[in-house]
Length: 434
Image 1: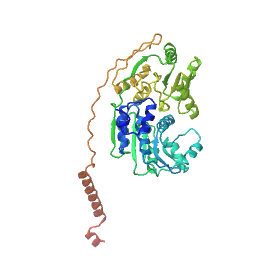
Image 2 (image 1 turned 30 degrees about the horizontal axis):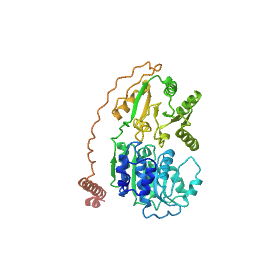
Image 3 (image 1 turned 120 degrees about the vertical axis):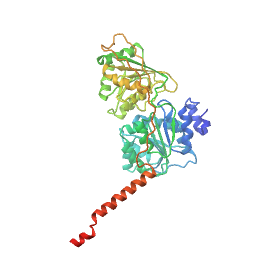
Image 4 (image 1 turned 135 degrees about the vertical axis):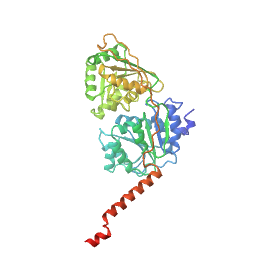
């Protein structure tokens, strides 16, 4: 299968091939024709599978057909992302693919001055990539208008809703034209998120190219069981002994990321932290230097790491295990991308046993333990067994969901009303007595 067979124009195919891609990934092979069909889409694919191109390519294709320049301050397609980094990454992909077209695009997010963004929107744009908060700020200042929106994309929809953006999303939805195409793309969908997200789309085509929460098979997983006090020393040892030139390290907290960065820098290892308390300029600079190889180690929290897209990132380290097991899948998905292999090492202490069990049950894999001389724990790691995955049981319809139930409910309601009225009407003989 080729990109041209998916219904893309020669201009887009040339742009894709100039990036070195000749064969679409499974999510692209299914997603591109589905988006071009004009129907709503709800797609789940792991990070690193090319899902961004699965919606940006057909989006550019659709808007290029019978092209008309956008009106001042108006947009035709809106892509919402949960983080600044992801917004910048999606916008970069749009810029690369639109090169042979007339499509105009912009990206807006918080943490930087709003004035240049307002200026860019004055001429209008075809595709706007945005974070929800900054988008609403721009709307309140009449810098962006939604009446021409044809397509809405929610990227990383699970994280968007998980991070509490549902209220902002609902505010945006009220501002958009009722008639539009809705696309939800995400790395994973929990059952609750899937239910919530399904209320935002109309009769969607569902696409799932990999089993839910399956770990990337091109990544080699391992854990080191050790004492908490030895984590920083072990990380430095692994970096130097393995001559790691590039590794993404996850911590649970912003403070932990800052402290670890300082410790690594003190040992002569170039490192920087990226998290929500960092200015956008500092985050952009750190990411740029990490991608170029100026920094060996990037220390990140889970939210800030969304949008880190490096094809050949060889190593991911879970310095702290995530509180939410699903985040393990997102973390290790940063390596082993685009067909490359990768390594994911997790530091586990006796306090982390429950989190480790949750992760292993989620991915249905017992992660092998490696022993590093001088870094053993004084505790023993309890033996672990995987819990069998229970097949999903069909949900019974709630009472009142069928036509018959609804009719009965109405009859019951009318009966109660009539009874109430009877209580209020005094009997005839009571008038005589009074």
